Length: 507
Image 1: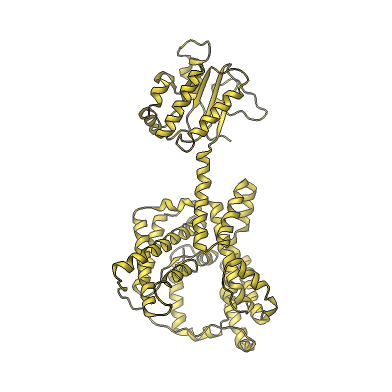
Image 2: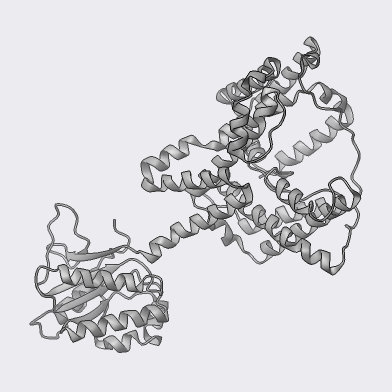
C-alpha cells in the first residue's frame, strides 16, 4: 500500500481550511500541519481500538464502483493537461462538457506526448509488469522536449524542483475555540482516509485470498500523517493510483515504497534540474493509465454475470462519486453498501420445507424434485436473526403460507437454525403470532434452535414460555412425529435429530 499525498483528501482539507485562513498565509500553513497531526492521532486511535471492522462496510461491488468513480475523476481532471488547454473548474460532468466543447483548442504536441506515454505504458504492461513502462515513457517525453524544443510549441513543462530537507518541529497550537472548529474537519478527513484505505486494502491485498489487518493499516496511515504534521506537511492517505503502480510493477512489500523514497532523494540531489524538461502531459498519460487500471471493467463484467442485480450497486456507487463531491459520494457509497446488506436482514429468505422422500431431511422443494408433505403440517424456515427489523415480515410470511396451504393446517413447525439472535421486540411479535394461531386451533413448535445465544435469548424474552418447553425440538422430524394431527407423543422421532440437514443456507 502506497501512503502519500492524495488528491481525494486534498480538496477536502484545502476547502475546509479556507474558512480559517487565507491560502498561502503563514497561519494557513500552520493549520495544515496541525490538521495532519489531528488526523494522524484519530487514525492511530482507531487502529489501537481494533476498529478494522470499518473495512467491512464496503462490499466488492461498492468498492468497484467507488474506484470507477475515482478513475473518472482522474480522467476528467487530467484531460485539460493532456489536451494542452486551460483547466476547468466546477462540477465534474459540467467540466467534462466544457472540455469536450474546446477540443478544437487542443495542442497536438501536448496530446502526442501524453498519448505516447499512455501507449508505451499500456504496451509494456502487456509484455511484463516488471518493465518500467512509465519511466520509459517519461524519459522519452523528456528527450522529445529537449530535441525538438517543444516548449516553444506551447508544451507546458515542470519547473526545476527546489530541494530542502524537512525540519521536524512541533506544530502550531491554537486556542480551544479554534481547535474545536478544526476537529470536525479532522474527523471528516480521517473518515475519508478510513474509507479509502479500506478500499485500497480490499482491492490490493498484501496476500491473495487473505484479508489485510485493517486496524494495522489505519494506524499506519495515521502514523504517516503524524510524521507529516511534525515535518511541516499535510495529511496523507492510502492512494489507489500509487498503490496500483506498485502492484503493477511487482511490488509486494514496504521495500517498494522505501526504494521509491531513496530514488526520489537521489533524483532531487543529482537531477532535479532535468525535471524542467518533463511535460505535464507525460504525467497525465501515466495517470490515465492508472485510471484505466482501477476502472476494473473485467470485475464489473464478472459482477454482472455472477452477481445479478448487484451490478446496480457498482453503477450507483460510481454515479455517487462522479455526480457529487468525492467525500460525499464515498460516504453515500458506504451507506448504500450498509443498506444493501441490511436489506437481507430486514427481508430474509423464508421458505416452506418438505421432506426428502425416504429420509428425515426437511429441505426447500426444488423445481421438479419429489417431496413429501405431512397432512395438516406446515414446516417454515427463515434464514435470519429474529429482530425488530424483520419479525413482522417473518410473521406476515408465516400467515400467508398458512393461508396458501392446500388443506387446513393444524401444526406449524418453525425451523430456527438460522435464528442466531433473538431480540425482545422480535420475540414479542412472534409470541403475538403464536397466540393468534392458537386462537385458530393451530399448534406451534420450534425445531433446531441450535445457537446457544439464541436459546438463552428465547428463554429470557419469554418465547420458550409462550411456546411451552415441550414444544422445542432438536429436529423437524421429531417435532412432526410428536405433534402431527392424530399422533401420540412418543420417542420415535428423537433419533432423527442427528440426521437433520439445515436449509437456512440453501438457495
